[in-house]
Image (cartoon, rainbow, N blue to C red):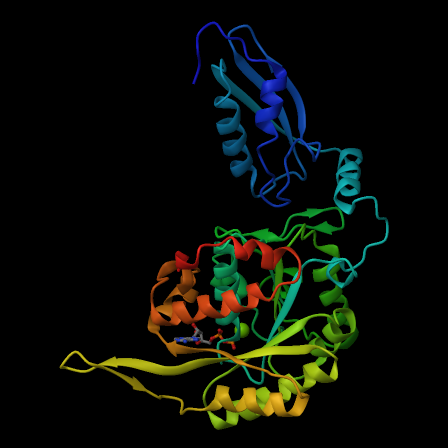
Length: 389
Ligand SMILES: Nc1ncnc2c1ncn2[C@@H]1O[C@H](COP(=O)(O)OP(=O)(O)O)[C@@H](O)[C@H]1O
Ligand SMILES: [Mg+2]
């Protein structure tokens, strides 16, 4: 780490610190006013104070580790003495101003005309069809391609996204009234409506205006930064959240998840039609639990259609006919115990078992959706080697 005789400069140390991002805000700590003092003694030991946004910041260990690692790499540095402090109210106000980019009024960034973020709402007719599983796997697949992805878990009945991403017990850090999305190991940031409750086991009868406020809060009061893609896990059906979303984010596009069953397809069509009534475009259908791959004693494989067949095709063709534009069937995801296990363990299948047939289909759907991106999302994908998967 050190070449004897070379004395590091404060500028070199500052440059190293500029490579460290705050894990929640995902911007250099130097830009956020988090670096308070930097001093280098004659022995080459760097003494520095880094300010956390709030006391007891859950990610202080990460900051500690990243800062120490970055400064240690500077030529001539023989040691790092890092002190963690906490921002004063005034410093926090300064940070909020930096984050707000000079805007005083909070607004939904994704609803602004210049927004480059693709917003996909994942909808279904009923619960238990795999909507959340599809959401988290699409998110991770896109993040794996280098896209910046956020998830809003707006399912009031079963906010299961945090658990599927391994952050069930995490709470967002709040800088005054600004909320930081919870970062996950895979780089995807998440906010769940469950995190807005004081306690996890508390039961809230989310409805009407309160629900609308919660949705706006998750979109406007959460500091999402620059996202390429935002995925929303909607509650099943055609309720209040779908209406609120249609009002606040009319530009959101909708992906309908269904199982192959006739009855499931019928309610899925209703969810799709609801989106269209809110002037949102339905971009496609994902059929989940399409079949179970069964290996016969002779080694040949057979598809067992546990939940019937044709649901995805049916929803796609019905909605295409109803709306007068093509609503494609984006993929058919097979049943796979490791998909459920991955969700339960907080390690979605596209990461834990990326070559499994179910994961491949989810990767394909993610590619299709990411490739449709206006602006940056599509461009970045153009550079992604096709053989990544
Ligand atoms: N293709 C699949 N193969 C196996 N299990 C699945 C599959 N899709 C979903 N599951 C499991 O089914 C349950 C319901 O899925 P979930 O994504 O929570 O549905 P929803 O969000 O629509 O209620 C979960 O336990 C999940 O792990
Ligand atoms: Mg769910």
